[in-house]
Image (tube, rainbow, N blue to C red; front, side, top):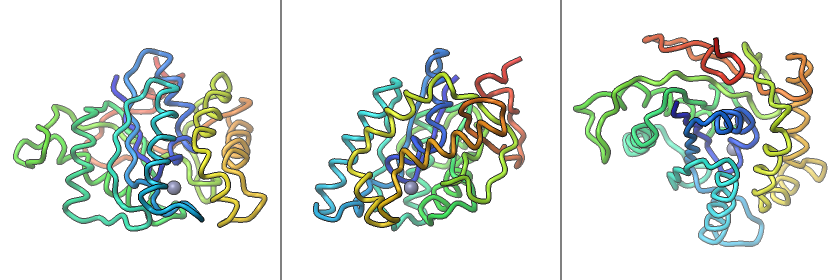
Length: 239
Ligand SMILES: [Zn+2]
């Protein structure tokens, strides 16, 4: 299968579905990680261009750890909009990956870029397969199945299915640690005690408690028409 995760910022996928992506990769599936914004406000010292370049490099290093292809959409951090040029770019991200399964942000996550990236991905799902929706890439032959990933901190998100990621938790942590520039930035904005790795590990443990595993990731299914799949598409759920 082809698997596409779409995150609003560099490091978002590593905080949510990266363990599941690692399991898919180990099972021989093809992984794409699409990043909507370039992270160009996440620095206390560098210019926007400089920090965007750093973050692209960090994201590439993370993708390389599981052999994922990076799709870098390069929109400005904090200014993601659900407009025609942006939706067109999302359609092309889906066309490039031709995914069976997509992982996107849920509609009630904390950050506007997250919520809008999720909405854009959901809205681009069907037009990606429509021939006369003309973009840089040709239409694909299927409509992908979508799962929402957990909210940051697990706040106000009740998973319907869990993937046991205990065997790849160290790999997931290494992927997140590629985003070195974000550790000091997160502490500056959200408090000295806030480490993105601690946040990710705490969420993984909490979901693991619910799943009967050391570490887990939680998902919800997008159930809009047309119905395209089920939880059986998740690693560990195969028939
Ligand atoms: Zn984010």
